[in-house]
Image (cartoon, rainbow, N blue to C red; front, side):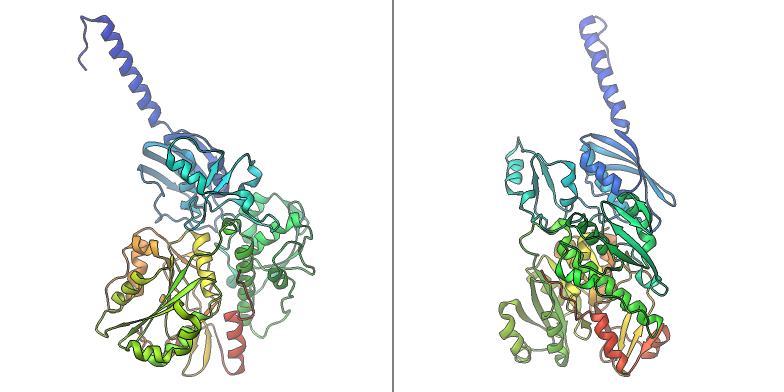
Length: 556
């Protein structure tokens, strides 16, 4: 900088400006926040309450060992210049530098979601909530929505957002609600621990007590909840004030039992938790299946009826079921499984591959009469690559969600419910299951196969169970135009895009092997050798009914 030595006034002004710029640069390089948090939940609460902004933030966040840190997930911020991360066994230290002044609330949310991906401030399909004069006590009812505080002023866009937001009073407060970002099944280990379950007495009265030991809610969630995964919790709670916590614990997947109805809970959830579990089982395998089924049924009911984040929406978004087949003999049964899904808003797009539209319409005459415009049939030439067929159906699909159904597997009626709920609480881009329950049609055997922990972020899922948002699919790059390996290519694209793959409960559908035109060819002996247990004869239908959970109705 050249200094005007012959002009003292101008010289003083230039020096002052340089000092001011240097101070501003030094301050910009300092973290606005050097804070430590006991859990991702505490960081999320901080995001709600902080009013700071800046270009650099530094956090240290402890997390329980059962949480999976998603280091593949990028920070949900568009202006990050650097992020220095140090990961230890039970904590994450991160310093984030940004290119422009940014509200700390957005930064804190983004960091929390790296550790626990369900913690997302902006959830697709959630309407905004407008809070005027509401205190912090109402915060748990609003998680999963964008929240507007007080009245907007300034730009027309902000005022428009505020006018389109709903008031918190629009939510029916007669029903008990819980915060789905805090209470969800992520990390639950029912199958691994159900072989020798313990029994604990849990009392939910103005707090939580287990076997006489009282816990603060945060302590119970962060430090204790996962230790009761294999426990049968006996609940003592009768007042409406405590029923929110009963529903919340049920949503985690921990099996609850009680000898009385809990006031305020949805009738079907009350019906489930008041049903005693059998005291004896023929095999450990059967016990595992029964416990998994009970866990999945109660958490489905708790999440659909008591999770606050979606209570204010008028209806669930449209889901488009994509069903592609070149086997006319399997067409009717496949459409039947799709049409019986209890998720309340669906359309079925049938892509017949090498079958004429007229022939398919004749086979599906009854379904077309029943479903009306909810079903469409589109014919594709046999030479069209499978990936291209799915791509064309995706262009036609009107739904916000896309579900891939195969023609030869057996789907429980709640499969789509489970998928869309899981996408919501996990924050993942792609949902799927494992073929833990496999049916060998040639010998009519039902196999229980090991696939590790459920309710976790894992790239190993199977194509017939994949469900995703259409927006996420397009962001990932769409379907690969290939005649084979379509499923694997899609999973790879979601992972490469940092959108996350979530592996949910193992029940709710059956993987069927019939050795008739599978794209992945394996002899039945391959599956039999992997199995931990096999059911035959009359046991097959009994276990199949438990797996598909046909007696649980969860539609809203």
